[in-house]
Image (cartoon, rainbow, N blue to C red; front, side, top):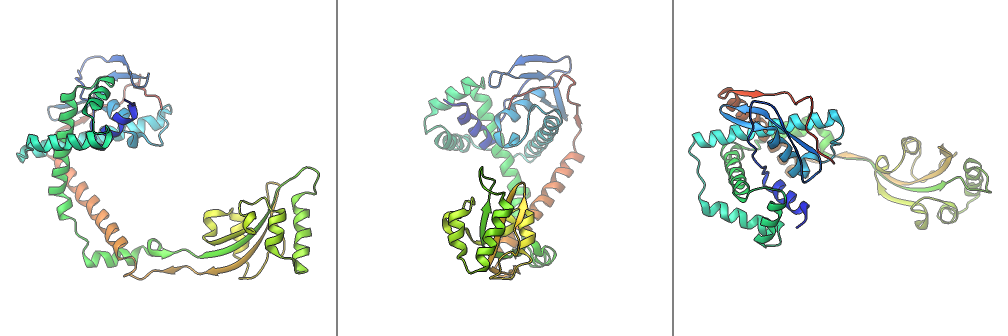
Length: 341
């Protein structure tokens, strides 16, 4: 069974292996999944519950989305990720504590159903593949199943406290539309023809070749024909045509700035040069940007308002849980834990 399959399942259910930490020294153990080192000890306390450094490292290791784009060998990036993960695990403990106080319980059949979904979606429907992957990662099935149950409890609490209370009020939607026109505007678009001339052995420099081609265009030569014959651009086979694009997404700032000076139907009077290259551009047509109507972007406005409301409710909820709890976070050890990318 591939390690990525277990990682996908763990990430899907946000499960990590629980370690037993002590307040004494640190234990250093080789990480079989990465070849790195896990330094065990206490990362944080939430009332009487502890979060070990092993918990934090396992969460980072088993959740590809969490560490995506992070250079684990970079000290600053790793420590930022470590602190972010500790915060997430503290919040998880707070939510589980709140669920326990609210006497929220899940029936075993519901957990079993979720386990079957994970097996179906990530282990080809074969529970033996799950057990093999757990054995490879040295994770006990009972710990993994408990993690599944805890994640379901966290999700249920989020629904009760946040999701069912999220509402996109008409006034909030109008304010969002008014305050953020950039989110609901169409960017100006243009159809552009390009001839890109690259340095070539045995030929004049690109700028001189561009001047010669501009002279031919001035005499009525066909732009598309010249592009097919001379251009190194990826659209040369199409006569250099870039159809209905936002130039800022495709062209260098020098070219975009030059295009802005042209009217539809105009060809650049002189080539744009950069890095030894030369470019001739022709603006075929353009459509100005516009602010879409409220009705056109109603769904997008609603999603943005709900996302903002969801974040606000979550921040308030977690803040209240923090005030009712004793939380202590410990600095990352100087002999910091390590994982390989």
